[in-house]
Length: 292
Image 1: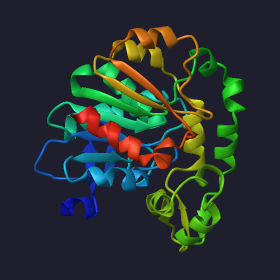
Image 2: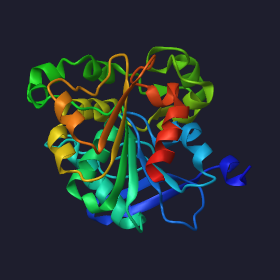
Image 3: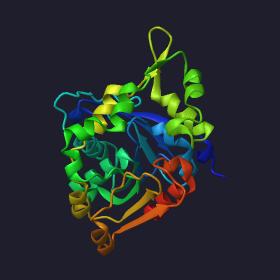
Image 4: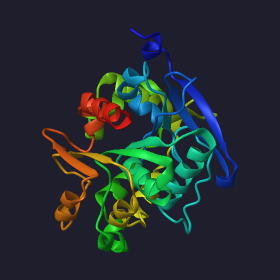
């Protein structure tokens, strides 16, 4: 077996001066080849959360797993008042591609990270060779424009109630294990999320790196047209969609997707929105197929 599969991924801090800070990334695989895949996480998570999913590919591929703005170790500013929504993540991704990638890459992502990848591919198609999207958030634009419905969303309310501070990372793991969003996760997946999702405080406790206010703001401020982005993109697109409570809303667009030979959508039996954690084998196969 290639030793790079077992090696700890390297932490990188990539300066994005036009975006006001640095973006953190975990780098997997051989550093002597161009970047193959740039992977973006779901709202509230971080790049390390997906370590056990991406590491088996490190023998052959070079992968950057990002900490998006307001998450993990990234230092990009998080200004909630007047923010432009997920177009910020799009523009951060484009700046990252310009700074760290020598050639077109596969953009991949889960949930919010998948949607942000789609928006980036639509804005600058020449930078993206393929898209791999795992239950991306694709909402009807009329839902995005209803501020009351968005503010009353269970996702927003849940984020605002989220406990931010614990005595230790181990206390976090014990509180989260087998519960809520984490009930289908492995122990390693949970430990990886907690490792990068919390930082030490001056009092010796740990606190969320993605604050509840920022997580809730991401749920409130979408501000994008995913279907226009699909039309503007030029690359092959693979989408794995959850069977239960998917955030990829197809209603009214089934015929459009079916007519576009670039786009392949699969609904994966027995999966929830946390499909990457539940079917890491399919995520790996999809990423390899997109690179091939």
